[in-house]
Length: 635
Image (cartoon, rainbow, N blue to C red):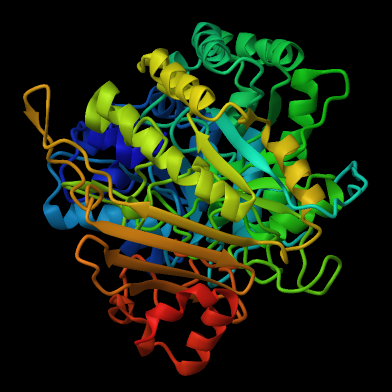
């Protein structure tokens, strides 16, 4: 579940400092909540003293009032005589904790400091150099005080002037990760025919708290332990079997969930083997809870993938190996690693049209599966299988969304850019009846006869995190699936790994990708059960029509007032024969987008929708070569 949406829906019980900077934080005054070493407060004073004395800093980022793990860290690690003695001369200790007495300026400074430490909405110990630049991150639950000290000393000894902005374990400092085991799968026997049919990838995910970007972040303000129980998992899985008999789904497990020893998670892990045997479900790893590559170094991301997948094998038993990985956004380097060393060739590695949502953005890709370029995870490979630009990884979207919603950025008072077939954006905004209408409306864009005839196949993908079923009526899911099966009886619900294998079999490279979609704005009622509908007017535009076109060379979209036979304006034109580069190395960057001539989100001045004839002549020719039926776009 996405954190910003929980806030909107009123479902989040505790907000972190990083999520509430400038809005006020209901926490005890920091000075009254401290014990242990000689804490230098406020944080701004600690920064000045560190620069003056040349001492590195230990910065505890947390919220003891809201987080039991934070309180435990202060009571145990910080109260340990060995740790206190170590910090006395070696470190300047400080904390970033919300204080109701902070001024607006101080709150803002704390928020910016946490952002610079690359630790949003989580808790950990940050080690900085004397200039206040982060050089390491450690868990608040160390194996031992002795190891905690050694790790701090290693970070200080190997610190760089520019800092270490991404998480890495001490043992991986300046090293390349080499897996202890390697796996390989044979390529499929490729079919001369394109893929046919209708398919759904239904994903669910298990975590301990909302943000688990690194291994060190073992707890958070908003915990989900009570939302991940065998009873909830059984309720969800039985409802899904009721709505879609024979369905096979994919479960993603976070690092913390795979290692948590509380009874809920111990029993839940046992249940996964049963689900695999009974339903044929796929169990796999969920690195970084959607954005692993933003928060972890390349080598740490590889290590997490290898060891996380080994834990999945142990959990399911009998030598089980998944065929896919659930990742949110995944860098090309991680994809190359999976294909080369882990024998995995399918990943949920993009969130289509993600922009100004949560911690990482990625607009610019193709809505259906494709093989990525070695340059960027959103760019389809331009060359043939085995060529210099080809990565043998089927990159799949995570959430099928309404095309009208996807034009928007993030969320606002009356819109949400992620409205589609997910329950947060439908059930919680509109209720059961209208929410279901929106889900089915989005479904029909992909499953209607014209779309399937044009594209060869229809594809829906969505992640309903397990925590949703602690509060949602499972019949909401049942009714959606039952309606789909009645209207489109040929629909199959496959695991992500099996669907990836099928797509790969029918697509040796990206040359067969040629997708066309038409959607007219949803005509929702102005009132429902005596209540005015005020949410999402950008979506409810029955007079408007969007057309999308995707292929390996570019993506192209138009928007038109069809009722008035208005002009078809170019809404998006993103070329894939241009050079693109992902953020890499030590850089923290939330925008992993590829934005070209014009982008649907209108985030830049050049992104105003425009007539086709305003595109460069050579670009008009490229579009018309692929889609000669668009010749009417020219006057």
